[in-house]
Image 1 (cartoon, rainbow, N blue to C red):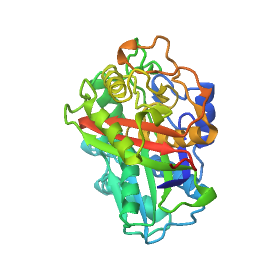
Image 2: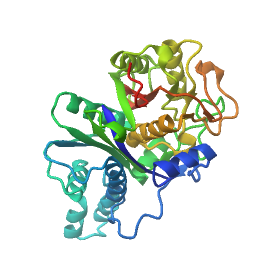
Image 3: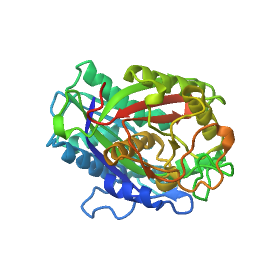
Length: 376
């Protein structure tokens, strides 16, 4: 499968190029532990989720040369918050008798997560029946990309627009705070003094095609793996065995050996349990001399469902620019993770890279992205 267009919007950049420059300069978009998107177009829809989704979808489609979605194209969206900002405050006002029933009805019509998918599809001028929503926590957008690849392989669709969007809301922030997972400081993934994660909002989209599109190709989705270890509602299995199996599957479907991976973009949230389990999984699969391991979340934060796809877009940029990114804000590498954590960015030949993702409920997903022209 071939990626022919990418779009990204985050607190660290309004498009893939701006995001890349922020990553190289280690310029974080996080403020007091949260990453918010600001200064959207005055012509953008009032709903933040729809506005971000439309902007990034159009970025990706414009680069791919797609003017519209056909009836034999697909669209897959991943989100955990959807259009929550359209209805959460209205719900509180209604219960406090501060909103009339009709205005509440209009606001609460946006409560189903699928409403974002339907509105976005219509806003893009498409009536394709091939549409799907994934809401499986932080692994969702990586799973969405894999599903898009499978749809094309099974000839369900010819092309697929895959995207994800998340907005910051009080429910999400306070929920993670109640789990004692948040840090008011900028995250330090794989640092022995890490204190927690930084939530953020944003969106990412990619255009996926099944036939080699020639010079329009940006990268190849070479392999993928999906597992569920069901160890805990919130914590990964301590030795990272589910993540290990997902990465191993990705190598097997890509028909590559571990030593052919040149860089691993980790999930790397900066939480104590996630970093430890992911490091163990990488060490178990790749051995003591593992490829460089990086997390970029100290720059753009953790976009929950959208994190995997945003970091896939980063991986496409890395392949294009032949540069391995460092893990910003690390001061003292936690050697107990057992992984080869890279601190500073550097030019390096890249043929195949791994994107790893973990999520609540023990959901794990991994991708292998390859440089165009490097299929054996």
